[in-house]
Length: 315
Image 1 (tube, rainbow, N blue to C red):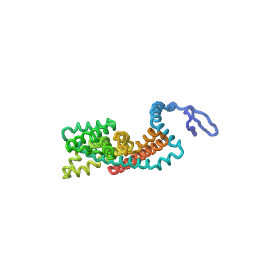
Image 2 (image 1 turned 180 degrees about the vertical axis):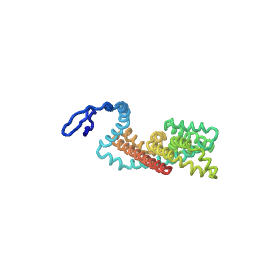
Image 3 (image 1 turned 135 degrees about the vertical axis):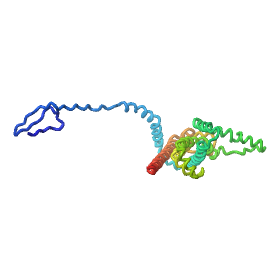
C-alpha cells in the first residue's frame, strides 16, 4: 500500500493505492489539522505620521531651492554673464579666503580654550564655560556691534589711546577691512569648536592620562600623543561646521560696514535687493548652495573614512 499526499492539501483524507484501486481513507485520531496562518496586516500608521515632516521639509527647504534653480535659468545667458564677471570671481575668492582664515583661527583658539577649561583647573572656569555657551545664543551682528564700540574709529579703545597720546587720528582702523571681519567671525564662531572638544575631553579616561604622566611623559607630549588623537573627530566636526557657517555669513560682513569686503552672500544681497537682478542673484545663490553641499559631502566622506580606519585599528 502506497500513501500519496499532495503538497499543501488538507490532511482530511489520504489517497491509498492498492493495485488498481484508489480509495479515500480518513485521517487517524492522532492527526490534527494545522491552523491556517492569518495574513499579516500592513501597518499604515508610520507612513501616515511621516507625511507631515516630509511636507514641511518640502515646503521649507526643497521648494525654495528648486525655485532659485528655476529662476537662475529664466534669463538666457545669465550663467555665463555672472560666472564670467570680475565681481563674482573677486567675491568668490574673498568668501573662501575669509572662511578659511576664520576657521583656522577658530580651531587654534577653540582648542586652546577647550584644553585650558578641561585640564587646567582655575577659579571661575565654570563661569567662563557658561559665558562661552552664551555666545551661541546671540545673533552674529551683536558681536560686530561690540567690536564697533570697542575697536571702531570712535570706539572706547581709540578714545583711550587719544587721551594718552593726544593724537586725534584713530590708531585702530581695521574694523572695515577683511582683518576686522575675520576677527569678528573668530570671536563669534569659536564656541562651535570649544563645545565639541569639551564633550570629547570629558569622555577621555582619566587613567590613561595618569599612566602617561607616570611613565614620564611631559604635558606637551601627553597633549600631542594622547589627548589630541582622541579629539580629532570632534575637532573635524567643529571645524567643518565653522567653515560652512563662515561661508554663508552675511550679518557680520554687513554690520562691519566693510564696503570693500564683498563676499558671495553680500553680492547676492546686492544683486537681488539693491539692483533687482533676480536671475543674477539666483545664479549666485545656486553657486553658494553647491559650494556648501560640496563641502558637506566632502566632510561626511572624510569623517566616514576616518571612523572606518580608526575602528579597524582598534579591532
